[in-house]
Amino acid sequence: MNETPELPGFDVAPERAEQIRRRAHAILRAEQAAPPVGSFAYRYERSIEPALLIGLGLCQALWTAHGTWLLLR
Amino acid sequence: MDSEALVAGLARGDTRAFDAAYDLYRAPLYAFLVRLSGAVALAEDLLQETWLRLARHSRALPAGTELRPWLFTVARNLYRSHRRWALLDAGRLRELGLLPPSAPQPGPFDAAVENEAQRELEAALAVLPLDQREVLLLCAVSGFEPTEAAAILGISPEATRQRLARARGRLRERLRIREVMP
Image 1: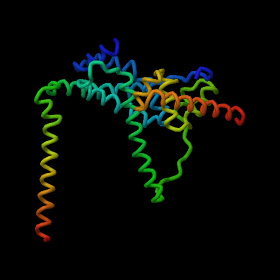
Image 2: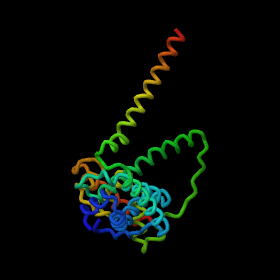
Image 3: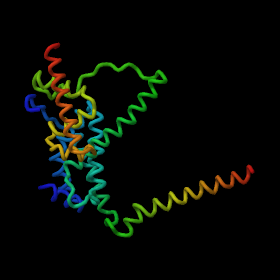
Image 4: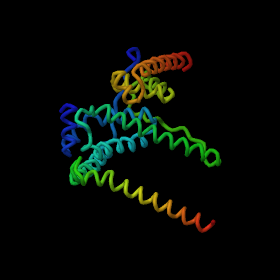
């Protein structure tokens, strides 16, 4: 775009920028308090527990569907 | 502070590293989002979500991560995702006859542009198809190399170059039409 004029840069309003910064700092601090990356607690929180909950939910749904099917048969 | 030091600082949860990255990349990222979306309020929301995602993922960032492309990738994907849902919503509302006709509103660049040429360029950029607009914003405005832009867009460098050439041609054409028919 060498033949075209340069576009002006602009920034978000200072109050909004500060609000975003404060929110991000709060998240950073919360993340710091969480278990270290790679530890068992971290893996449990991020993958094992959600997988267990999804598995249990699926079992519950299958069990309910099976029970309903037996009732209607 | 270079990108490597910033990523290392973020991995430690260092708020000073976050602030350094925020001060460095906030304005270009915001300008990118405003031009991509054409809406200030939406751009602010997407900007916030981008930075909050960085805070949330700061500890898991791999050591060699290039922060600037990472941020632009997240911002672009957030906009794409928002657009998909917005199109679905608008389509459904239109089907039900509930969507009011949109009134013309002042553009987000009105306060920032300094002359008529810039205003025309912003207007021509705003009506480009999204695929072409984003590649042009990344390469010509934000200063990414086509290979970096390709990684952000998730396409090959060759496809990026072709898309960029098409976008430049279309932009030139639009500017010429505006010159002939003011």
